[in-house]
Image (cartoon, rainbow, N blue to C red; front, side, top):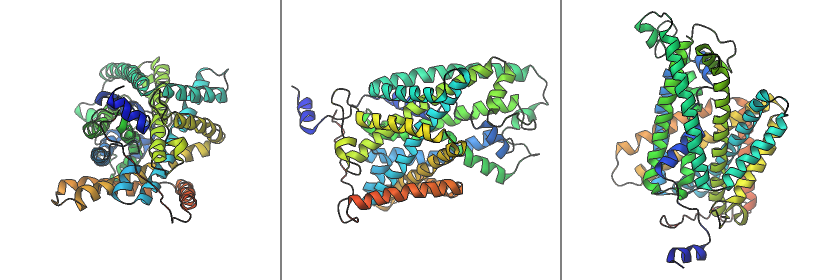
Amino acid sequence: MSAGSTAETAAGPRLRRALTLWDLILYGVIVIQPTAPMSIFGVLSNRGRGHVVTTILIAMVAMLFTAISYGRMARAYPSAGSAFTYVGQELNPALGYITGWSMVMDYMLNPIICCIWVSQQANAFAGGVPVWVWEIFIAVVFTWLNILGIRTSARINAGLAAGMGVVIAIFFVTAARFVFGHPHDGVAFFTRPFYDPASWSTGAVLGGTSVAVLTYIGFDGISTLSEEAENPRRNILLATVFTCVVIGLLSAAEVYAAQLVWPASQPFPNETTAYVDVAARTWAPMFIIVGLTLVVANFGSGMGAQLGAARLLFGMGRSNALPKSFFGAIDPKRHIPRNNVIFVGVVTLGGAFLLNASEHAFQLGAEMLNFGAFIAFMGVNLAAIMRYWVREKQKKISNLIPPLLGFLICLVLWLNLSRPAQIAGSIWMAVGIAFGAWKTRGFRGELVNFEIPAEDET
């Protein structure tokens, strides 16, 4: 038996470092979705008065500040706990626990929402099968594929990314053929998606940007795979930043082509399905092709979100913030937190049944996802300021400005969430604090016991 195997046996099974930089980038792209702006294209166009490309690019710059903070904190703490660990180690264990609790809401809602969306679309294509049957099927498939192991998930991500890439490329071709096959008014036609003096409003563009940020929600999930990544101190930062840039530029190209095909001056038949209508204008079969692609995209996003949620729960369980015997366990054969994968699968199915019963509740769930995400983003930015500015002997302005801007931007966006989302999110946080108080007998005992394994363990 090798020394490494002996160490693993003594300490218990560990997560396996099997993900390359390319695997991490693919995971991030799939969770965020290469087709991310398509589902909100109509909303962005109406809110930003046609300046969808501009809102996407501004949001990319805004999220890059937080992405840099995530990547730099992963260098210091290559842990599956992600923001939970960063905040707990740099600021305060109790604040880390609260951050982790907010992330649980974010990560658990994502696969639920994806399960509902995919099930409803599948029902639209195959009406003979009830939505609830599709929900059971999707939740089971999510769970089964993630139980197969991290390498299987990585290969599936590569396949999904390739499939969506082909469809996006086809759309670009059909859009180009449509644009250049119809008359337009010269250079101004091609610059209006960026800036149209006839409809420009700074307030409207900023309002659209607050919605466009949704395009990037999920990039933080890369950091939850730190203990399964090769050379995490380097690759997590590169993958997080690169994923935001790739998604940002690809999204900008997608909406730019769409705005050329369907100028903002022409109202959409349906704001929700605006992009599908745009695709159909370029070539009628694209209506079905793009619709099916969005189903695939949300399937991949939901599966990836379940993977990230399981790793977050593992980080919290190992640190004793949640019952360690269940949430902190690793399957010795596949080296994955199998209990957590199954737990998230059960919650996904139950949540899908619950939220699907009410359209209003479904929308609230989507907004609550942002409530938890922005709390985590703010916490990570503060942790980066503490580690790389406050505690550093040499005060470099480059260590202060990005996380400070990231924190302020996320704070503004968080404060502008709807009132129902603020109330529901606050109730969730109150439950978490109450659990922490019960667990520590009024916060008199140890709330969190952080444990980060050596990086070279496999």
